[in-house]
Image 1 (tube, rainbow, N blue to C red):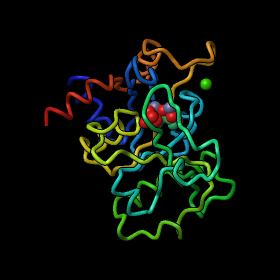
Image 2: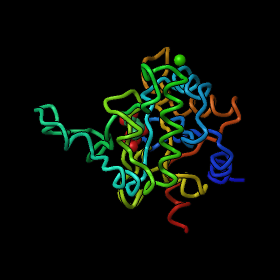
Image 3: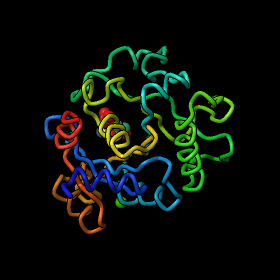
Length: 216
Ligand code: 5RP
Ligand code: ZN
Ligand code: CA
Ligand code: ZN
């Protein structure tokens, strides 16, 4: 199977993939899981092997059903007045949440519970009272996908959600940047691909996923 097909199959099985967005965008590789498959051990891998911010991207329709806004539009503070990102028009951050059954919210057990419950909620959003199940602020950052996914924006948010759509899993995916403990920079694509290879994880370029989605 090509890289993209292997990534779709891995995702369908509940296994992670690595996706590099593009050299002219963030130039980062995220370790990405379907949210419903995230165990405490997976959270430990995300924080130890990836090391970035652990986020859950939700599809636009799901976020709409839960009344989840973009965080920037909710903040009445001068820091949110202008989002001068170097690599995109806007961020996809929504609210940070914890499931109400968590205690501190940060442990591998707590974060994996919040993440799996977000995936479960995303399967039948119309049946979920979001605020009854989750509190904000919390320790899992929700990202809101663009309505038309890759046609609108080509961030890891949309790349992960597009992969979920291709794999037929719920529109809830965990993304976390792979960082380098020695250079203190983002992991290079070569090092991320080597990590993926040594762990049997598919590594793909965002452009390959965009092509695959366009071919449908
Ligand atoms: C949140 C981020 C990451 O880059 C994440 O990959 C989602 O953002 P984007 O869709 O912009 O790539 O900044 O940790
Ligand atoms: Zn980022
Ligand atoms: Ca590390
Ligand atoms: Zn990203």
